Image (cartoon, rainbow, N blue to C red; front, side):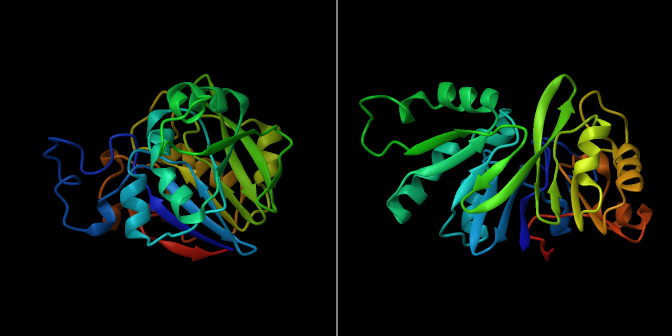
Length: 253
């Protein structure tokens, strides 16, 4: 299995519009972060996790020409606003794109992109098929996927366990039954928004506490803001098996 980080930034991305801070002005390419998304390649299939507003740029940069399904974590715009860009894959693959998410997220997608689900579609509208995923999980494009439900303040969000990989973003709390699904994983991808506390996201200290508790083989932090500090400096503050992800990073699980 391989995961490629297409984007590792928070909802505003890095650099933020108009921000003069040292992180936003950094010339280190690892500090330039598009909105959070990832591509998982497993069993000959490509699963896209989230489709935010930078999707077109991410697909072009990573030279992605085929996807087999999309997994959505939740309905916030930095995770679904790029769904219209999936129509390019309709043209390439000559078939609808299957999207898997919980019922609330499916309803939000159906509402926001109503033109894609109309009885009489405008020519060229995306062809999408929504699949409501239950908490017990299921098979996505022939690949077993198990949701891990976390809380984003008061909003339930799906993370996903795929074999030895667990991918979680936008979490503030994870219950003990859901943590049990994470334990023993080879790679944990987890949000770590910034160093200061936040009402709906793990900060760096809280994310490190989760890693210490569930003990993955390796952990990679994502969904970071400029409050995380410069990549090259913050990396030195982390344990040896914990890393900051960055856009374009690809690793085998």
